Length: 300
Image (cartoon, rainbow, N blue to C red; front, side, top):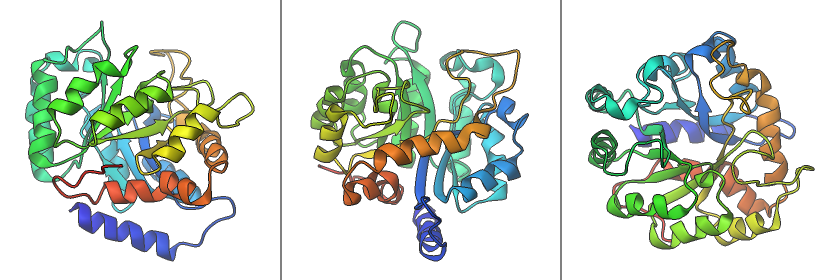
């Protein structure tokens, strides 16, 4: 199925005209949650992606099936991962609900979902690395050979390292470069886990890792690592807003209305890289990643 999807993506890339300042883009960190649908209907969300020449879009949602509404609008462009947030109520307690494993298996077996995530693992809040539901999802990722998007907010890469080492056959997408970790932590993970790719999803210069300064200039420490490991990075917009406020239960999430700002932030810092590296991170790494076979991990 992944091979067929990739073929269609390549056809899209080859056939679609390149819009001014809008080279084909793989956005591998999107959400389409219940409160986002209140603001932007599925057809409009897909139109936003098309307008920005996004040819591959990985979507997570709360509740889990919500992003299937985007798939129904565009089954070529959209890849939907299984989210453990199977209801609005279990967003912070998913690891206490074993029904998550039942629905994950059913969804992966049916081919409805082609990955697992985004899944938040926050030291001090949960779950523990040995949690039954977390371990069950990791085993399902290995069994079905699907990518696993994990979001960690640890103070060090050492929290994630035992997970990627234990599940060496799972292809991990490490969300937001591990959170607020410096690029040196990325290098430390790359050296011990060849099955990890980092996705640099952020909404602005102040989110997740500080890729750029206030003027949008790519920071030298990140540039050095991107040039050193050009095959191990991808990018996403993570359209959640206002992201500086948590759990805004009192109003809907209008992140999709700001999509142009988010994607332009990334196009700007990507444009400061050599063309070949820029193209890998913007597009071709993701196309290759989603066509990988069992055991076919990068060793760069």
